[in-house]
Image (cartoon, helix red, strand yellow):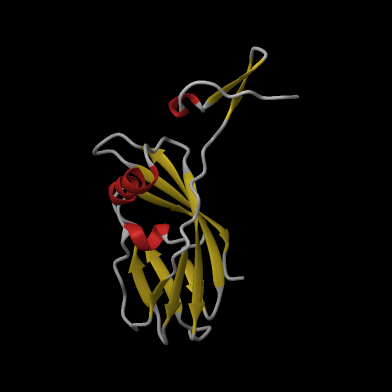
Length: 152
């Protein structure tokens, strides 16, 4: 089957193939940056740190890192990736080093953020989080986070 795409990029959510429509859910690419935090204190994360694609945390005790607001994530995506739509998603790999098995890195939610699955990562572990935009309306922005791999 050959698929021909015509029109503007704003119409790419519906690709016409002989009268059949295919839903294409855009997925943002992961930025190549790595956000390294070496400090041993809790941290308020920025949207840029979340969108970096890799969050490395070196510490010796339990920490509570607060996620950015959904509005700041949607705004950052709008300014770096173009218009954001419901269903757009990206991944964040979390790498925690130097933590003992009795200490943990906890992610605290913020306005418009919902966490589904594990938000506590103990010891020296790697995890993957999937962020999915669920509302882009100004003042009601929302992002759901799913823990794909916790404590690998």
